[in-house]
Image 1 (tube, rainbow, N blue to C red):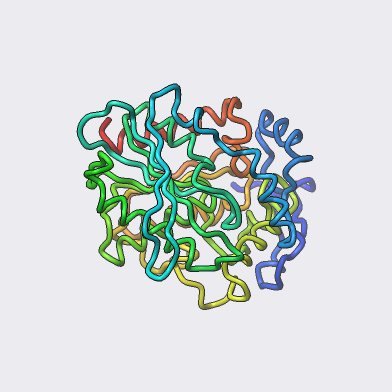
Image 2: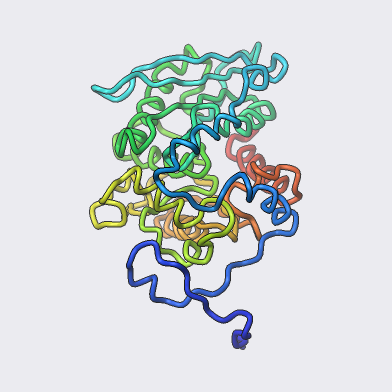
Length: 347
């Protein structure tokens, strides 16, 4: 028997971002944050507002410089050799920069993680978020290649995803020189990087490109329509709320955002055929904007006969494991990703 909602769980109206039929539907209060994460979020609140307007992008980029990872942290006390290399970008476009991190003294071709950074399509570089990939590499003996792509709004779709794909193709073609086994490459990214990773997997399938063994999609940004229940529940809460999401997608797609003609390579949730894709790991917090689109994407992968593993972290806000790495939920989240990689690679 299903219990009737109590008064405290009565629907509340979310503030609409755009006029859409979904905005007229009732929305219940959001799931509560995990207690440890809620405490971390309270500290973060003064530094990282849930939402932002497009005109705030320049100042956000300035603030993101605080997350720069220095070379000495990347080398892990000599465990990795670090190289920044300019390689050809898409036809007619500038070169792109790849950060290549190889285990020191490794012999023989190694599996590789092709890492795509987050940042809402509007900020970041090839060092943002790469430290977790280096954790995997240190544990499992991997090469990490992290791509720097052109950012919106100065470079709208398809600049960013084409940069990411061009870097993947170059990496596969030069695998021998890099000490990489081209048959054991996976793509990985968080947030916008997760969405771009899903898009690159679609491009590789459709263009007959490098054959990936997996796609690690961490709280991926997949759907420009921004009208899910979770998007409306989390308006004004957590990290990267519905207003921020509109700003990010608007920077990438302009007036096309949310319309009928958005490409699946811009917003992978738009894809109508998810068959033939590499095994996917998808995780997301229960208390974040991307929850419902990520769950739906995993479901559609299964429906298409693909392999997918889905984790919904109870009480997790967007990017919680990076902002509060010592929280028990964050540690479990990262350990679960590592276990999936170990199984995928047979390591």
